[in-house]
Image 1 (cartoon, helix red, strand yellow):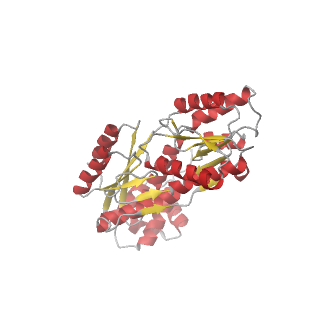
Image 2 (cartoon, rainbow, N blue to C red):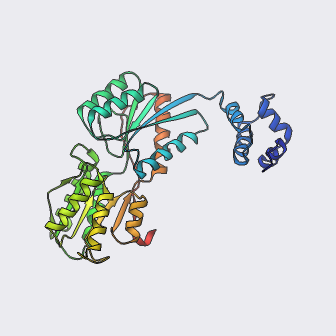
Image 3 (tube, rainbow, N blue to C red):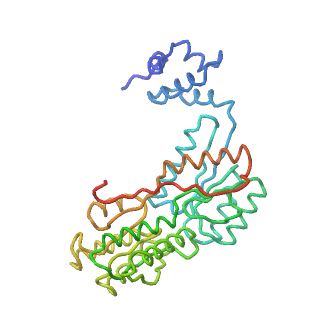
Length: 349
């Protein structure tokens, strides 16, 4: 059985005296915040039994802040990673006693979104959400703002003029980047398709706009097909991709502008197995976000490139803005914070 860490072990790990550790544990005399935090980090690292007590001591005088985060589809690896990044960003703050309340919605129904926002707003001071853009959502954000609860939009903007700020990628540039990749990597000019989750996702609308505008300006030899709506679901995307490949066997490429890429990847793998095209010789396919599925698809040359959101940087920037909003109130001119996109190809992994 492993020996239980002692106060002497903790002092040695933290680089302080046993007396200093005793002062932190028992709150006998004030210890510099930097020293107390070093003792806590050492306690957490070695599994010292009183680590939680030390944390309580050093945060007792800090203001309490409750952050609400509303995301989509808890089962998707991307949103799981996003939730972890948000929780870590709150936990990393040393100037507050922060608590992250993460909730998920299962579908794109505005009613479910508004109910979840109201529920989360009842137990938090400030909120951030991924949401489609709908008048019911805007009214809910406005009502929360009236209660002093500011709402930030994430990844895809919504409730413009009411929400506090948008944080995510510049979605028009994302669409143009996807188009640039297809135009440069397609085997030959031809038909190109784009999938969006719905016409209510503002970010998808901007990606489609950027996608189409690039081809109009720089690659008019490609023909852009009618936009496909996949409801951000794996099965719908899978069926629509197979249908696309059946109707246009020589399609030059397509872009999945939102969720559901797993279905497209599955359909492409099936087409490869059936010999419709050979590895590296099929359509140029661009998807969003680096997950186990998209990583494997890149490595197997099933997809051409992945455009990714820097979740760690986004979470840190978001929490900084949310803390500022709680302390100073709404911004005079709510705006947008664009983060640099990540672009991954098989050779970059």
